[in-house]
Every structure is written in structure tokens, then in C-alpha cells.
Length: 129
Image (cartoon, rainbow, N blue to C red):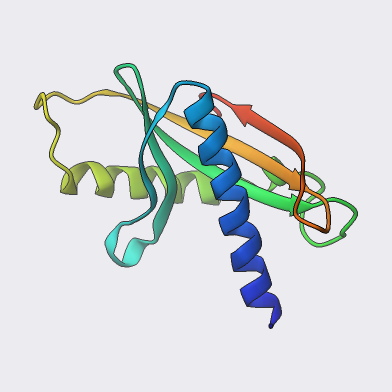
């Protein structure tokens, strides 16, 4: 397995852990890996009450040196702008049951696992950007 496949598997594992965390916290996960045409994808789209939450998930393996120190450090200004564009595209292509625009929030979840994939830490920042 090449490093790209391992990174993709690690990301999918972190997104599963983040989605489970959100559901336990009372969120309703609407979509995972929501494709927005050629723009890319949103990791998790969820609802919390009247609030529509677009959540970016970053996963890191403890003790490795690749990338920024912590998972949330990887969500810089370029990534935040891209997620906002993706969210706008998602809103344009989805039906809203009540026809009204919901409150929108951008969250971030940083997941840290050990080399065996066991969860070591999960940090959920609401209204992260």
C-alpha cells in the first residue's frame, strides 16, 4: 500500500471517529464526504438544532513528524476559504425542507490516533472559523 492510500485510510478513520463523536453529542450527520462538483468535498455536514454545521476533520498519528504539530494546525486560511466555497456550493445544490436559510457554522475536529489507529485525543472546536 502506498503512502497516498495510507493517508486516505487514516483520513477516513478520523472522519468516522469525528462523525461518531458528533452523533453522541446530539448532532444529526446529514452527509459525509459530500462532493461539490470539481471543487472538492466537505468532510461532514451536520445539523445541530437550526444550525447547519460544515465540519473539517484533520487526523494525525501521534509521534510522527509529517505535517503541522497538531491536526487543527493544518487548517490554514487557504483551507478555510476553500471550505467556505464548498459550503456555498453545497447550499446551492441541496433542497432545504423549510425553504429558509439555516444558521451556518464552521467547526473543526482534530483527531489524534496511535499507530494502531486507537483514538488518543479528539478536539472539537465549534465555530472554528
